[in-house]
Every structure is written in C-alpha cells, then in structure tokens.
Image (tube, rainbow, N blue to C red; front, side, top):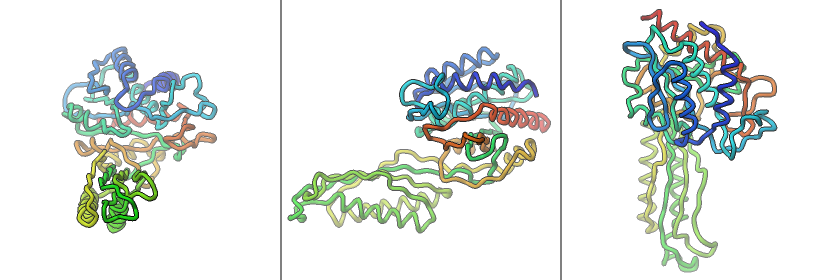
Length: 368
C-alpha cells in the first residue's frame, strides 16, 4: 500500500490551512496544488480555480474528489492550536477542506504518477455556496468517469471510523429570495398604499404550509422591509432556504409559493419577484459504491443517518456511480462542529482516508 506518511499529511494540511481562501478565490491554493502535482509527476489542468489530473490509461476512469475552498470565519487559534499556520484575516478552513485536499494529494504522492488503473484526481473549487462542481462538470471533468468517491471530515464520528449511508445522505437545498414592491402611505390611510410587508407575511405563511404538507424543511432566515411603524411598507425582502430529498416535492412547493405571491399581488396591489440564489441536488449514494467501501474497510465502517445539510458532490453522482462517506476525526478535546471557529482535527485521522482511497483503487484494479 506504500508509506501513508503522517508527516506528509501533516505538512500538506497545514500549508493548505495557511492558504485558506473563499469560494472562487482559491488562487494560491490552486497554484500550490498544481505545483505539488507537477512535482509528483502529474500534468494538472485547470477549470477556474479548480485543478484535476489523470494517471493511467484507458476508460472508464475511477475518480476521487476533494474540495479546496474555505469559509468567512475568524479562527479561534487558542482553541484550534493552529496559530502557526492560521490564515490571515477572517478566512478559515472550518469545514475540513484542507484535510480533504491533503488526503487526496497524499494518494497522488503514493501512486507516484503511475497506475495500472485509470484514475482522475479532482480538486474542486467553490463548494461552499457557489456550486463549483457543476462548473467543473461543464468543463469536462467527468468525461470518461465511471465511478467517483469523496470523503468529508466528521467530528461527531470517532477517529478511524468511516460513516456510510445508503441512498440519500445530504439533502437538496433551494435558496431563494422573495422581493416585494409596494407603495408607501401613512398607516392612517392604508387604502392609498400597497403593503409589501403584509404581502411578504402572506407569502411566508403559504411557504411554510407548502413545505409542511410535503415533509420539507423550510427556514426563513432574514426579512427586511418597511421604513417606520406608522408607514405602509413599500419594500420587503425575505431570504429562504428549503431542504428536500425529493426534487419533485421541492418544485411543487415552489409552485405553491409562486401562486401565493401572485394572490398577494392581486389582493394588495404589490409586485413580487422570486429569485433563486442556489439549488443543490440531494446527494444520493449508489448502493454499489457504498458496498465497495464497506467491503474494503470492514469493521471500520459504521452506518450513519442522513443530514439536512447540503453538499454539491451530489452533482457528480448524477453523472456517474459513486458515494461520499464521512471520515471520523472525533477524539477527546476535538469535537467542535464543522463551520465553527474552533473546528480542528488531528492529522492522524487522515491516515484512514488515505487507506480508504488506496483500497478502493486496489479493489477496482482486481475488478478490471
């Protein structure tokens, strides 16, 4: 299997941690990955700030994906213990993407630029909110790919464990805004105005009914509207997030919301716009791919429940067979949740991730 090299994993993860960059802005991170791949004997290609490379001849290819972007969070270095390599400013690898990337580079290092199995390594930009996976796919990164795998760090799962889930693992996510334009008037003469806030409340009530009837999770995270307590509001904006595992139910709920908005316009004299900010498909793991993971990792694997968080690895799974699994990083004193300023992990957890990917390659080779 080769030397898994905790030292390489540690050094690479901490270098990436120091380079933390926001989605779509991963220029230094991308350059580091490309340079490292060249040093290891590969010929990297770019799609935006994403990087990918191939090893081995033929098709279909076995692909592995890591995401490379960070979050707009200021790291609590007193808790993480990463003061020597924390990024400057308010950007932090608070979702473990530095670990994902270090792990995949380690697999590339062990293969040394040669393989009997046709493999593609994908280092994806923009997972956190801008759907970089679809841009990578549109750029051809899934051409000739037959299977694809990814892992995600999980502080709730014990170090050394692999969490698997058949079928739906992450919910789909539809993020949308409802903007309403009305007409201001004094509250003593409401007939002269068109109440944008009243319309937005009617739309919100209908939206929650539409979600509840279909068993969907809806959150109204922010509403802004109006100018003063005694003035009929001329503008309102509401920001929603809808989570789902059935795309048809999501579409039906959005139609109900549109109907409610049209009804509010008719009754109140307002005008509305529903603006889609992002849509992520549900992440549906292939049973075949999950079985492969379980067969190569044995007792390290544990079943986990689906989550209502979203992951744009879902787009790759619409193109090829594959799955995502959780990689446990939990240990005493290291249980801070993902997306928190105190999230960190011991790089020894990545050894299991490297082992997983190498064993998948080995099992794929035997299949061939």
